[in-house]
Image (cartoon, rainbow, N blue to C red):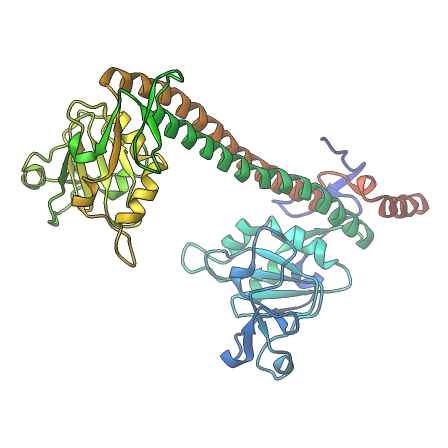
Length: 454
C-alpha cells in the first residue's frame, strides 16, 4: 500500500532528516523532555518476582519486540517505592537501554515504573506524546550506538540522550501517527509471527519425508516384515537392520591437542558437523606432522564417509564428507566409514527422528551430553540394498533441497517484513508520508476539522 505525502515541505536544518512537513519542527529530546533520568538498582530484598501489586522494575532483558513494555519479570516492593532506594518514573514515559548488547532498544511504559541503571527514562514534556516519541526513537538505534561510541563500551548517558533530534508535528497529529502505526505494524507483526510456525511445519514435514524413506523405502507396494523393534515397526522384507557396527566401521578420534595454523591441513571437528555436508569454510588447520598423527590408525576421512559428533552441545549431529581434500578429524568426533554403503543414505538416517530416542538411552553427562564410541556402534540402523540406497538418496536430495528452499524463503520473509516495518515507522515519524486521514475515524474527523479551521 502506498501512502500520500504532505502538500508542503520545508528544510528541517538537519542533514540526516532532510525536509519535513511545513508545520513540523525538528527538536532535540532536551527541548521535548520534562526530564531524562537514569534508573538504579535497589537493595536485593526490595525486589521480588513478577507481581501484580509491586512497581514494575525493568532491566534490558524485559525489552522485547513490542514497543509497549509488558509486565517485567521483577517488581519493586510497593512500600519501598518512595524510600529513595529506586527511581520511580511516571506513566507514559519512554525507556531506553543505554548500555550493553541491546543498547538503543526502546520501550514505552503505560504505567508508573522503575528501572535499573542500564536504562534511561525520558519523561515527556507538554509538546510531545510519549508513545509517539517512543515510536520516533525506536528507529534511531544506529544513531544511539554512534552517539554512545559503541565501538568500545557504548554508554548513552543522559546528556547524549538529550542530543537526539526528533521531527515533531502538533500533538493531535502525533497521536494519529501513533494510532496508524499501531494498526499497520500489528498487521506486519502478525505476518512475522506466522513465519516461524511455517518454518517449524516445513522442518517437521522434511523430517517425516526422510524418516519414511530411510525406514520404509520408496515402493509403497513392497512386502513388509515386523522388525521386532517398537520404534522402528515394519520394514521392507528384503532390508536388513541391526547395530551400526554390522554395516560400518567406527573410528574414534585421537584424544590429543594439536597446534592450529592459518595455513595447513583442515581439522574437521565439532564446529564443522553442524550441517548435513561437511563445512570447511571456517575450519582450523594444522601442520603435516600432526595431520599424520591424527590420521594414524586408518582415521583419515575419505569422500563418502560421515563424521559424527559425540560430545559437546552438538552431540548427535553429523556431516557427510563431500570433498577429496586431505583432512583429519579433531577431538570429540568419530569417523564412520560406510564400507559398501552409500554415505549419504547413512547420514540421512543419522539426521532422522529415529536417532533421537536411541541417543536419549545412551547419552551421559550433566553440562554437555556425550555418547561413548561403543554405544555409537550399537545404534540400530536400517540397511537397504545399495542400488535402493542410491535411489533413496537421489529422492531425498531433491526433496530436502525443496524444503530447504521453502524454509530459506520463510526466513527471508521475516527479514523483509521487519525491514518494511522499520521503514514504515521511519517514514511516518519523519513526515515522509501523510497518514492523518488514514487514522481511526474519530481521530481522522478531528484532524480534518482542525485543518479546515486553520
